[in-house]
Length: 574
Image (tube, rainbow, N blue to C red; front, side, top):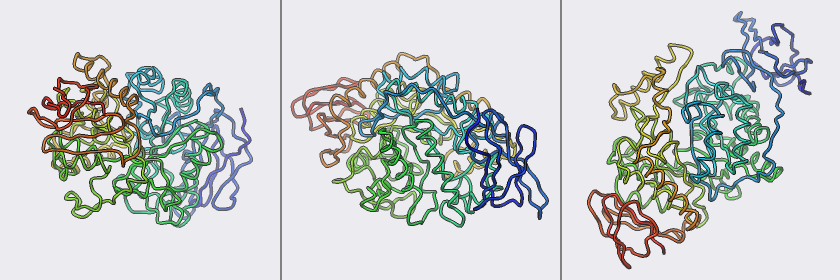
C-alpha cells in the first residue's frame, strides 16, 4: 500500500541528508525550516533510514527516522513504513470520563507469561470482573534491548516490537473498548532514553542540563517549535490513529517550559479538540512532585487544565502509617494526623516544611472548586514498588489484613483510585527495576547509579538486583496461581470496588468529605458510607457507629461506636 505522503525528515544540523530505502540511497532536497524532502512515496513494508552527513567533522551515519512508526530490528535498526489502516470494531465505544473510573497500571512485559499485548487481551475479562474501567500501560515506545520499564524510550511515535508492535497495540485497544475498558498510555516527554537516542544528531531535540534521567528536552528554547510539534503529533497519533483514551504524562516537573503557552496546555487544547471532534473524551493525567494545583486548575482560572494528577502524599501517609517506614521521603508521614490531612486535602505539604527537601513545599488546593476525581491515588505504583532496593511489594511485608485495610482507605475515598498490577491478590513476586541496554557500559553505569541513589536514601545497596540480569526481569513476572490468602485478598478487592460503586464513594465534592482521627484510628465519611479504620496492633474503639456494610475482620458495631480488631476496618452506612 502506498500512502499520499513522501519521505521527509526535520534535520537542521547535518550538511546533507539522504534517504536509504530498501538498500538504495536517494538524494533529498533541503526545504524550509530544516526539513529535507523526497518525491518518493511511502510504501508499507519498506525499510528505510536517513544518511546524515557532516562536512566539517567528516562523519556519515545511517539512522532510523525520529518519527518512525515501527522498529522491527530495535532502536538501532532501520525504520519500517507501516500501513496505518486497521479493521476497528469499537464503533459502539463512547469512552469514559475520569470521574468514577478505576485505573489499573500494568507493565506489558511482566503482566502475563506471554509479555505481549495479546497476553493483556487474555486478561481483560478478569480486569472487568474485578471492577477496572481503564488500564494504564507503562510506556510502550521502543527502548534499547528487550527488557525495560519503558521510561528509556527514544522513538516517540513507535511501539516496542517485542510487545506486538503498532498492530498489536491497536488490537489490545480495540478489544479493551469492546470489553468496556478504556486504555491510557504512559508517555515520557521530559527526556530521551540513553540507548538509541539519535535525535540530537538531526536537530536540537534537547537543550542541555539534566533531568536526572537524561538531557532536558527542548520544549521552549531556540528552534523548539518542531520539537513541540514532534510531541504534539505523537499525542495526536495516539488519540486519533490508535483510539487511545488518555495519556499519563511522566514527571512533568522536569519539563523546562517557562513559555507563555506551555506544552502542557497545548496538549490539553489538543485533547479537547479531539474529544470535541470524535465525541469520545480524552484524558490527560500528570505525574508531578510539586504539589501544585495549577496543573489541574481550569485554563480559565490560570491553570493548565489537565484532567488529573497522581498524588503521592496519600500513598506516603498510608504506607508510612501501616509499614512503619519513615526514612527518606516518608520522613514527614507515619501518623494518623498526616493520613487524615491527605484524605481531606489531597496534599500533605501545602506550603508546609518538608524535612526531606529541607524547605517549604507545595500549595493548598481550593476544595470548593477542585473535584476530588482530579487526584489519582493508590496503595502502590511501579515507582513505589520498583524504586525499593529489591523491588519488594507491600504484600511481602504486610499481613492480608493490613493490605486490605490500605485498599479500603483508597477505595472509600472520593479520589480516583488506581491499582498496580497484582496488588489485588497480594502478589509476592517483586517488581524490580530492570533494563537491557545494548551497550555494556550503559548497563554498568545504570547499576552503579542506582546503588548510589539507594545509599543516599538509606537502603542497603548490596541487596539491589542487577538491572541487566535476565533473572531480575523473570522474577518480576506476575504468577497467576493464587494461595488461599491471595484468594481472600482478591475477594476483598472485588467487594470493595463493588461497594465503591453502590455507595457513591466516587462522589467528587471534597467539601462533603468528613475526616477525623484519634491516635490510632481514622474515620472518613464519604458518599453514603463511613469508613472507620484501626492503624494499630491492638483493638481500638472508634466513636462512630451505624450498620455494618463490610469488613475483612470481625468488628463489634454499635449505634455510636465500633470496636475494631488490630489493623481492622469497618464500612458503615451513614
